[in-house]
Length: 246
Image 1: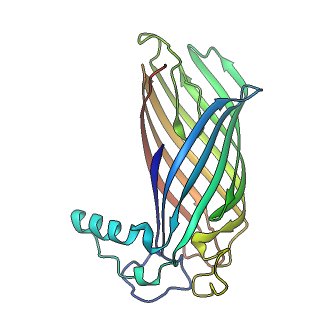
Image 2: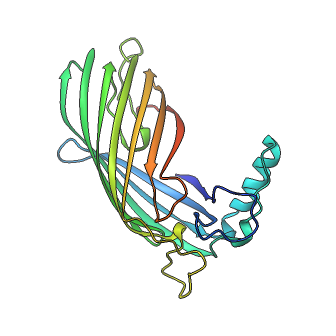
């Protein structure tokens, strides 16, 4: 169980007027419930159900202004143009299936996972297919969203270090954060011409010991709508996890 915040702004956060050539202002706040299980073919599956709100009620305007004030960043001034309130109810399924491994999993190995996922709901509707290669010493099995249980392995034989690289392609059918709404007749102020084909790729490294895992990723994504100011966007992400076998 958890809470999730998504915040979307145009590049120029100092402009008070609507910017039709850039991403619209949008905030999404949801509560979510995740289920993890092994599939019939050794695939590792995550089901994610989230519900909440898109729009001013998400509180993202107040959150961003507070954070920027604390760290001394520029004050965002365009939240008056954000997408209006609407409900969020989305269901996502992610699957990873190992298609091959060279070497010993408790030593040095190189493994390959096929990735596929999809979301259906009021905010996002999409399909993804991708691939990821992981190489290193004592590489743990990867679960969607970085969950890597140790399954009771001892503390002495559980140390691992690895690198990874992957990518995927996404068919985008609906994205309410780009102004496409199931609930509003007139969304012309926020509507963007969504690119139905989006790709992502990433590089990263990780380390695990006992029930502790740390992973760092650099990820890049292609443009999500026609005329987007930057053709490719990139960001870094750190994931720190701790789990116990019950």
